[in-house]
Length: 481
Image (cartoon, rainbow, N blue to C red; front, side):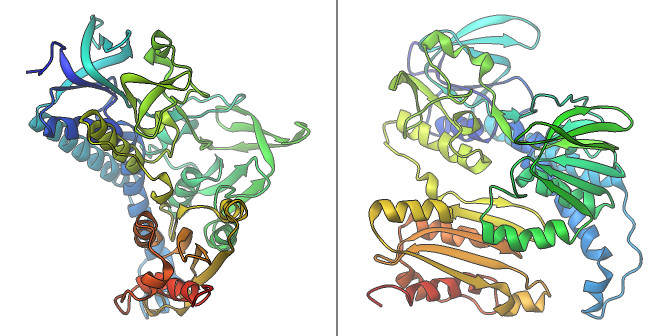
């Protein structure tokens, strides 16, 4: 029962990871909580994002490994020709989604959260409208409201999506068929991960990137070595500086490529399928934000450091937003952290988030990861704060574990302050890079110096020694060393 005169102490709109963590955390602290979801419980990550895509990457990665006869022969291993069943790989992903979604739902129910199925919206201060799946519309009241509606794939103008021959990552995770030749528009983490899956399963890939180089959001040094392995070394034709100005579904799919600057038609392609991997946009249009005079920035809901929603620069009482819809860092673990922080602030335990210490990863084979500043951002910061920037590189080819795995093509780049030794950022490409970055993220969060970190003992032989070497190189460069 609510401790107030409201229907709920807290209503969360959206049951992705941000909404889930917020609802559970609030319920665990004795609040009466309702959570509204119009689609599947678990949101994008569980149903159409990180969970199913990692299942596909796990399966296709094993196919890639078993099919690499040259690599296996270096171990003295000779495998039979690899066979796989597309349907069973897809079933593996679907079963994982069902299990995670079921566990998430049961966790909320056990915590005492009321699950409300339908479309949620604001109806003024501390009021939420709910249009249920059966069409019934009602108004609920809540002491506090958290908006956690996430994001959807962005489809640029000129691209027509039919969900079968031209589709986004939402449909791609179902792996309903394997096109002989697929074009992937965009070379960010989504495009790279699906290129990894499709090439492992025998598809020919054309990657189309509007910016002047592929993998434009990654560190240039990391891109150089990663592109050599993940793009050039595979059956991928990469086209940078081209705009897919028109894409028409069908058999075949027709693509018109234009020059990014002049917008003049340069080339026409006919492929079997197109995956549109051009980023994501916030899902905020149906929230009726205008009822509280909230103006979005390209759909993103403005918030302060405590997750309070802002209207004309001022925080609104009892209204909060977390996750992709805020545009801070569009990552599932960021959303989850924001959800917990928002509830802590509702409870009076004031907290904020250091976004710079939140790591990101791309789960290709091998992986790419990063945390903190890019090199360009670090250079700007050093000029602004008047200190000397330190940059060191540590290579997997000097690491015993990587050599034992015959996976020594990798690099770690560490950015740090030469005056204090504080870490500013790190970028890694190589075996298990997604796991390695966490150590650096923790150090960055704690504002540890490379001197202290260089004295920590790492297990031998492990990949973590790549990080240790970087710390020691950095410590040797400090002014007071």
